Amino acid sequence: MSDNDEIYLHAEKIDKIYPGTKALDQVSFDIKRGKVNVLIGENGAGKSTLMRIIAGIEKQSAGKLYLQGREVSFNSTMDARAEGIAIIHQELCLFPNLTVFQNLFMASERTKGGILDDAEHRKLAKQVLARLKYPIDPDTRVGDLRVGQQQMIEIARNLLIPNLKILIMDEPTSSLSEQEVDVLFNIMRELTASGISIVYISHRLEELMRIGDFVTIFRDGKLVAEAAVKDIDVPWIVKQMVGEGKSYPTRKAMVDWNTREKVLEVKDLTLPKSGGGLLLNKVSFELHKGEILGIYGLLGAGRTEIFECIMGMRPEHTGQVIKNGQPLKIESVAGQIASGFAWLPEDRQRDGLVQAMDIDKNIALSEIGHFMTPLGLINDRKESAATDEMIKDVHIKVADKHLPILSLSGGNQQKVVFAKGALTQPEIMLLDEPSRGIDIGAKTEIFHLIYQYAERGVSLLVVSSELEEIIAIADRIIVLSNGVKTAEFTGDDITQDNLVKASYIGHQQADENAQTA
Image 1 (cartoon, rainbow, N blue to C red):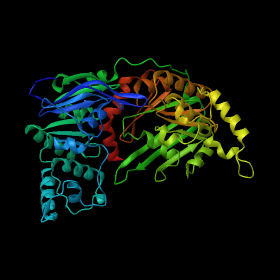
Image 2 (cartoon, helix red, strand yellow):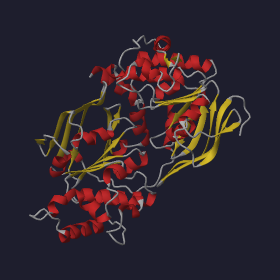
Image 3 (cartoon, rainbow, N blue to C red):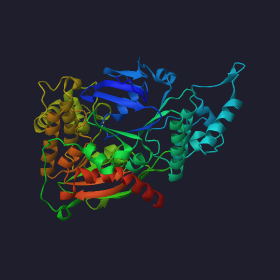
Image 4 (tube, rainbow, N blue to C red):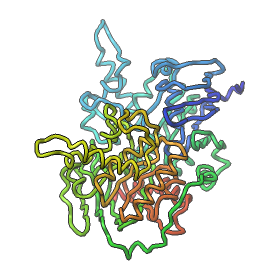
């Protein structure tokens, strides 16, 4: 542990282990007093996990935290806030049915004579909003504010903490205008000048270079580089993020996909965001028979939302989805499955599997109607033959298919989800993070399955947060940033540098496109 007075908090050899993955691996990290400490890394690199530990949201699996040289342990956010540590989450944590001042003082109410002192609440609310150059009426209902205004309320709430020492900001500018960003940066400089430390996570490299004092880069759960912002540039950041890469099986089909049959067209796909703004803004792309089209982007870019629109989970979307030349009237998930789509969700435990069912029944779920007799009973023999065929086809390692689904490893559970989708004999498969939470061996097997089905003529849309994976999997890649398609790469143009620059630096372009769209 360092005795340097400039270090306000020191994290020593922090590990965080979740089932199937190690999110943090022996990470030692310093938060410098009165500085903007910037964290950078791909999705899943471990930066937000470390911040949740420091903010008391989660407990580390191993390692220690030291605050001004004193060992501390946080069992809740209340413990962390008592030490002056606060976090502003990327996802808003507000009560839309309550007023601005009620949200600002939630869980820190002032009382007078044993009752809530709303006069004091309103006065202090006006003061902090004036400081942010945001003179909103404290009695305004938060649900009536646009998303950018709600983000400023979230920031204001944390500025009211009386003993604030460390403020963690996770993507605080994602919903703000350029003018609002300028105001926020001025406030941040006021805070650091008074000795408050800020930890700043953002996907906007131009912002980080502008506001940051020190940069720390995470990759695959490890801290891989640190530097003062004045000593580095954007290419250095990109190089540190990318690393040396991993070895994954690749399939680079030497095909001019424009000459292949077009099976899917998405035109001007637009999805409104609750509270204002857009999750997707006029996204268009094409998919050809037997093609693997990768979708790359950072958290919040709109990748999963594309799949949700196509599968009928977002009826509020606009734009066209055209399959084999015919515009689709998207009404339900079941209807889309019947139309030849299969979806493998990112969270297999929540959305892909039924925990109370065995392996056999999980595979059969997507085609349960085809196994029904005229009397409404399940033809067990027909169902069993179909699931046996899928277990063999996707190479699920199982001694008895009637065992509980949770008896399988993460990789084999993922194969069950794949088999469930493949059982419907789809023309188009939508794979959202197909290798999430599985080891390198299982990832290789999943990749081979993807290549195998592409060779059979199935067309696949694949979302992956890992650069090495998406480059290995995809024949062509589109990049999203802030809900806007910022780039499309094929052949030799599919490089890590190009993808990172389009997804990070593309935030500014995406904002400009969104404002002029």
